[in-house]
Image (cartoon, rainbow, N blue to C red; front, side, top):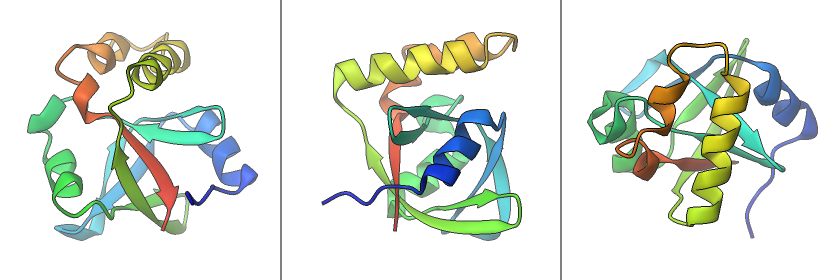
Length: 121
C-alpha cells in the first residue's frame, strides 16, 4: 500500500513555489524543481523532459530525497502513465504557476512522460 505524506508536508508543497530534490548522484546538493499536489498526492515533472539530469538520475534509482526548508525527506518516485492523472497534474502546474512565463514549459508534450508521483520512503 502506498505511503502518504503528512498533511503539513502536502500543505507546504501546495504553497511552495520551489523545492529541492537530491538524487543518488548528487546527495550533497539539491536541484531546484517545481512540485504540485493533486488531491493528497505530490507530483514532480522535468521541465527539460527526459533530458533533464535530475530526472535521469531519479529514473535510474527511483529514490530521491526532497529538501523542504531544513528537512530532508526520502521519497520514492513512481512513473505516472495514467492519462487522467497526467492531465490533472498539468492543470495544477498551470494553475499554481500561472504567473510564471515558464508554466507552459511544464505541460509540453515532451515533459508529460516525466511525470512522477512521490510518496514517502
